[in-house]
Length: 119
Image (cartoon, rainbow, N blue to C red):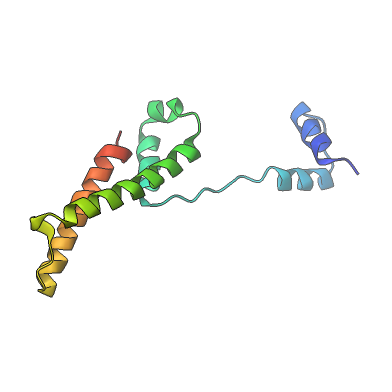
């Protein structure tokens, strides 16, 4: 039985592989499926529309995960800052509070998109 490293080298050289070796090779080089959050996914879709920007990024999955992390940090920071603003403070009236919270979330979402996603 051939070792995994030898099998990969053999496949890279273009030598013929047996059916069993092909199955093992496929197991060894399974594509990795990355899962991104909301903003990482939006950034991926934006980059797919902008091939020049996509090619300029060395490690796309790491970049998209970083966008998600930065978006989470920015969301926390902006939420804390805006929740202290008089415009978004809670009033005690449920419907008014929901409207203010929704408006604040929309402002934060727009800021994240402008600062991190559509760059």
